[in-house]
Length: 254
Image 1 (cartoon, rainbow, N blue to C red):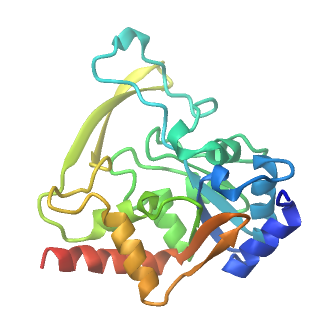
Image 2 (image 1 turned 30 degrees about the vertical axis):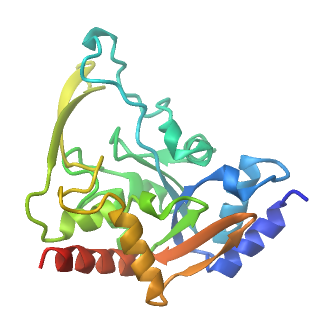
């Protein structure tokens, strides 16, 4: 039988999602199984579990272009229409286009949010080191938020990039690049700089470092696991996971 909205809300509540909280979600909609009403109902169930005072957050990224592309053909980043990167899944694009959703200005580290704290979380997103201090990711931590992995692999917890930023790790790789951005003077190429998020930030870290951190965190008895629909899911207290991640990373290089 297909899952329904009320049953999905009950699953989320059982997992630990609480009304009034800030929740950052990563999702594999396919893993949830058949749902009456499809992806829109999954999103509605998330909003039901959070209630009118809760805020839902999702990482978006941006459809890529390539260094050897003809730069006269590279599109200007326009956050009003920029599609969430397809490899993040259909729920993230559904969140971006949902009535009342707000998207941050960063093309690559961008997030969308729905709820009372959406404007604050997405506002003033720095173009330099867009996963670190002053970003929506730090604001999720400041709001005592949680992370829901709704059938998504543990290695895709974007908030752990914040732990990479904050941890004392030697030889962090830095990625410098440009994006064509809208300005009051018209489209202009803007320089960006980040710690490299495409792979672990230091070459000696294992490829699945985020999965190892998250699994070790769950093994301590923190967090919760359980099904949402048919999706094996996990819920993490974001500040606790990030603190754990920073300690894990620093011990790795001790």
